[in-house]
Image (cartoon, rainbow, N blue to C red):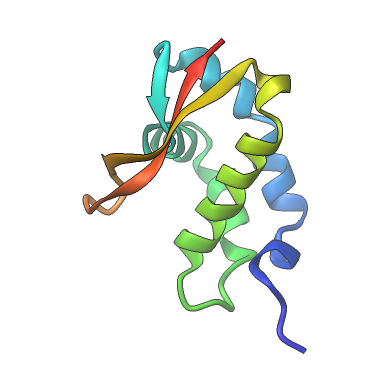
Length: 107
């Protein structure tokens, strides 16, 4: 049986999520998910690496982890005091590639 990316998330991804409020507090009034991930990975490098290892068995571990992190951000938006204002904002990801992601606003 093949595990889905969501089922791969474990304690390390949970530990990384604990830092979401801290990163949100450092973001401007509007921010993209890409900017959020860059800040999260930079400030909590060890936790980010640990969480990334949970996805080493998939073809695109960064994409899988980031997808799970964005899902968690979206699922807990009310708790974090943010709202999604654009689900397809053009932005630059951690690899310098242009792609779409969520744009969030602190409510």
